[in-house]
Length: 106
Image 1 (cartoon, helix red, strand yellow):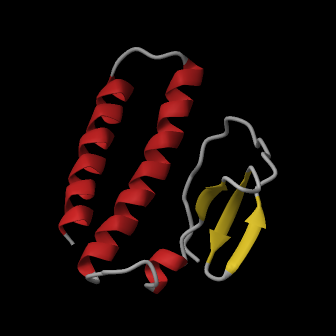
Image 2 (tube, rainbow, N blue to C red; image 1 turned 45 degrees about the horizontal axis):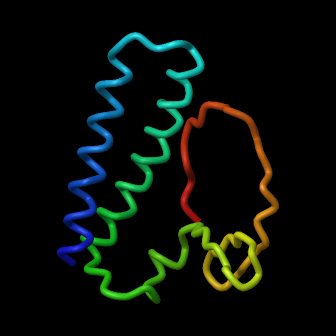
């Protein structure tokens, strides 16, 4: 529980840093990149806060398993995406630097 709370504090600090960057002078491309990172990081912060409120204590909790997680398999030399009990080979797709409006839960 303390690890999640400590990590949540770090997330908030990083978000505040990104927000102060957005207040400054940025190129259009850099502003779009930072806004996309902010959207993803706000979603991640919300997930961690839910895990704290639900007192998640292990990696088998549904709130954790229902998140898209990426992991590197050293033996296969590939990245995999996992969600619930599904595993997919990550194919290094690039969708471009597009703005995100929301991230929807499972």
